[in-house]
Length: 400
Image (cartoon, rainbow, N blue to C red; front, side, top):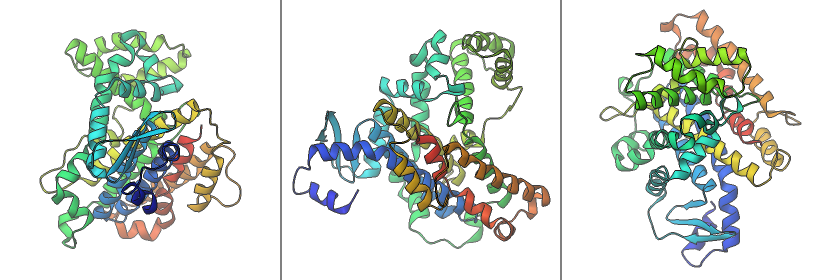
């Protein structure tokens, strides 16, 4: 938002039509900026700088929440906030809370509303099938609503904690650092986390967040099974299999795909959830914020924001050609390509796949204690810069 636009709120009522269109367009742009912040956070982490990584990841989370709320018709403008109450009508809300607190209060309230669960059930699409359809035989979107609420709050929790815990926020954003052990992060661990995060962001033609969505499906099925039976899926695998099999078979998948999916859901294949799921659950120990936890929560909230934005664009009748000017300008501006944009946004994954192969070769070359930030900088300079280009995710995930 420009300072001129914000300053005008204090003196006159803005044009409702213009402001409405601004809010509608801001969903895409906030999400895009959020992915950019996330990439910069990864680069900071891979340079051994968790202070800057947390600061940048927090703002990625902030932009993700701003994007998500914009797609729901809420415009956040420092201390002047508006809601779309009719076509081309933006009505000012009766609050002067600043951005950080207002975003959390909105997200916290919205997560309790049925619309949040419905959005989640329509947006997450393992194998191109909505969660609502996956769960139709066991309650549909209503069965998912409690989990959606918990996930939204968990993934946005830093928006609540950072404004309240000024000490934690200031450590990353404003206070100097320089005592090595106080904020030390391990090179190999940072590399492994970054590699795992990018791997889970790999898109497919069926879903732009296929790996994340499959993990959400598995966790959601396990959670629902536990809520209905009182047993953990891993403690009663035979019963869990009986619970899952009819759900899978009702989706009309090929026999080979059914078998592959069942192995995944029963944790016979890929038994561990991606790191961003386990890290996102980590609470901050006293006096410290875990950098991987904030990055993980930001990535997952950005997946939601991107999905909601894409749904809004499709519902409004926009296609890839309509927003090509945005994607092409972003890609050239951030150095993702020269000349013409790729014909298919999914082709952007090839660049990341090559970088991850180089990263894997580095990890195989050196034992864990020699995967230092110095060696990473000396031998993986181009790789680290490339892994910071999360604008790729914005382009391939929000191009209808």
